[in-house]
Length: 462
Image 1 (cartoon, one colour):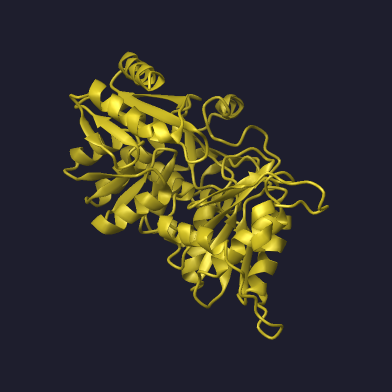
Image 2 (cartoon, rainbow, N blue to C red):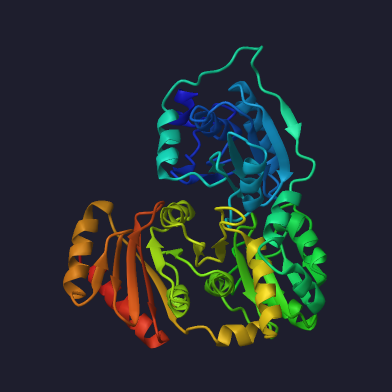
């Protein structure tokens, strides 16, 4: 196994594959090119070597390569002496709940999130039902250089099918809202699961809430009808279709259903940043307390928290980093601006089902439409850009930026962030490419565009 990681030889033995992208947050690659069953098994074996005794939950999103990888991964876990609890197609937040409810040693979600259909990947969960953090992720990568501790024939693990993956997750989500109030509204809802894992639980959640539901892409077979990342351009067709259905709201999931984008009753894409803002507002109406967002998330959440007299903390980018800070400050809520709220009452995983139910409850409580709710939120403009930079030049980049923006408050929490009273700029290296990303938010599109432009100019001169 250790030698295979060095060469990544394809099954026919004649060609050398490109290596998958492996980081502390998981593995991702192109099936048949950079991700093979052998590579997946090697990664899972390394993960298994870091776990305590006990079963491991395995689930997948709807991608067509999922069953193949699931077979390889289950075999690898069994060969390491772990029993497997297999849930087949399930959402990533559901996997986190299953790990906790079944007292598993860990969990594995087979998913490439929003990547195109040729990709697949592996997300790892600890026994607490959280996506593993940097320390565990590094331990897994270190273990890939070690020889596996295979068990003998008497210790090979067994496999059990999880018959109902959604009941516990759905119950936890419903406990965060007034279910009866939502049911009385009889909302007309469109759910675009786009042939991902979200329909498995999304259908039952929205039906139980007495919505008049139209489900798009309800077969979790990975045959995406549009590019899977829920962005405005990718959802133009959904918005047009939903408008003809006179929906009160349109919910759009990514393939593993940990992120949610929203289209309002007029067919307008409101942006993933608003998903977290709306759900955070609802939670703080119920319970005040600290909250956490990553340092690339819209300032809307900070403004909302302050309006309730609450502190909004910043973390480094990444779900696991948000959850670490949430734990440290005992936060009542958190999330990332990619449409991923994190509600501790349900689990420390980004969750599209939390988002859907809590947005519906906010609509019901206020008796307002999505567009009206959005109009009441703070208004900012986010601009993003990237530049090719060698990693060894990052210190000079940061030094030049600090000299240019000497009037800003500076943080090196993740890359370098510059804060002013009415805007902020984050410059951070990509985890997978030799580039740096510049993200700016300001009160107007002109101001944010100008700030990103200046940052690009400074970076290009280094």
